Image 1 (cartoon, rainbow, N blue to C red):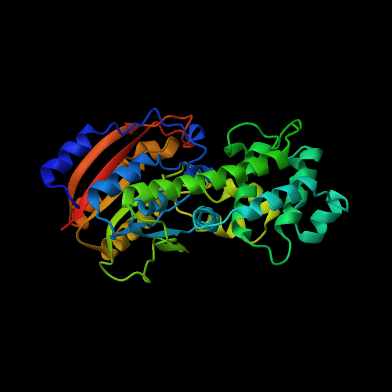
Image 2: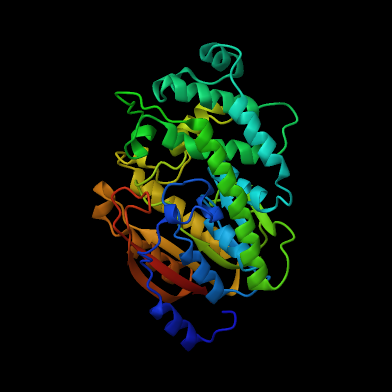
Length: 393
């Protein structure tokens, strides 16, 4: 429990306003967490608070459903070692790119790269370029022709041979695709392939260069914060970020981590993998259909009669793995919510809590409900979620 005793912990947790209703991610563009949007991202203050209370500097923090990497960023800020795991390879790329930005000591290259992006034009037709590099024809249905031409020019800069900071350039490109797209409604319209009825022109090059400049400033701000908090300079990433499955963490030793802070997928609420549909059009490294088939509780499976039983089985297996890798007296902190539709007929939060206490033999430490602000969290149909903390006996 770090530097706090049991009474102090209770008092601290009870004093926190877990709604964090004053937090809007768009108001903090220089927070490295804002580098790339991600469905249902943590409000950073939640893992930050839990890490501060339930661990000490140098201890290991695990997030087996890491998403956009918010837990890892907050753990790194507080000088905790971390392990981030996610089945979604796009999530891992986003998380790694954030640390690639943070670890960049010299940003002198960015000005010349930005100028190259501004000046770059395709020397061939967009159709021919897409065919040659393997970009799906579907891109022509999402973007204004001039916007797409700019995006393809940026893409050609990113794909050049021997390109340094390739992952960071790629992820920042991915981060602007939703706002460049002519489908202006909720991102689920894109996951469901609801194509725009009319095209909207967006200046993609300006948006890309601006986002890159924000990444540079966010990197510096992270380092400054880290140095103030820990009284030493940032010397690089202090953890692992791995594409893997929370249902099988066999590569992590028993009782290896000190704290687990995570928000598992909510039943039938989000398509984490399909949310990266636009990115997949430009960078066809993964087959979305194959990944979705193994995704836990995906929204696109919400009409399956077997979804609930499959989801609960997957969650129980994942929680068993969490117990195995967590040390005795270590803490498991979950942020968990209840979806709508068929999922609403069964109290999943209560089931999960009961399973952790009765089957896995954890002690319940804390449980509170928080309101979700729709303008800052992309959780379709979820208005409240629970923050639950358990101690391994």
